[in-house]
Amino acid sequence: MAQSIHPVPAETLLWEDLIPGGCHWSGLLRRGTALRIADHTGRANLSALFFRADAPIERYNMPDTLKAQHTAMLTRGHALYSDMGRVLCSVIADTAGWHDTIGGVSTDAGNLVKYGASSYQTARNAMHRSAEDGLLIELVKHGLGRTDLVPNVNFFSKLTVDEAGLLQFDTTHGKAGQWLDLRFDMDVLAVFSAAPHALDPRTDYAPSDVHLTAWRCGPADAHDHCRNACPENQRGFYRTELLYR
Image (tube, rainbow, N blue to C red):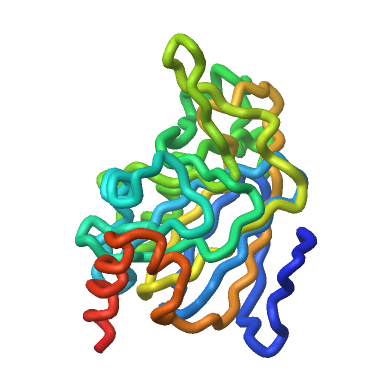
């Protein structure tokens, strides 16, 4: 488990789980729950999608999240918006400092070119599963499918832009022991894949395990850092709280 300078109080702990590198996970996170996501060895990329639990037609919206907060990446203080202007979850702590929002997901076709052939029939759990495949497997469990594979977040990954205007994956960004805390501001279905980033140039398939720790943190109060990061966030949290009155 990654080391933390902010340990989770034992009396608030709900559960812990591990996503092996390359594997996938989904689950319900209730409003007022926080989830610590930790990178064990410095090679993690966690592709993530978020849906309103009781009405998954409402889901994470990348363009609204970025334009509302004048950013192209996520870190502490940022809220993740739904396509109805509500806050699904927010980043309340972060040691990585940058999480990709525009790089998309790896695909089986791309993995075949980068890593070579490795199917479940020949490699079992060591197969070169793509983030797209992992997310689709989890989406189907909840009655969702390919049309619900919207632009995602890639936690722990950083992209830069070179002089030619091309996106480049920063291989120096990931560090063993990095973590972030997401607070869920609605009841949310979270869908995760721990497969490598689509633009990661490294040709060995060696994604980190990702450790999940959930605990009760309570909803955002009037002095919350994410709520007050910008005027749009204040409006977003207000619209969210109207659902729970």
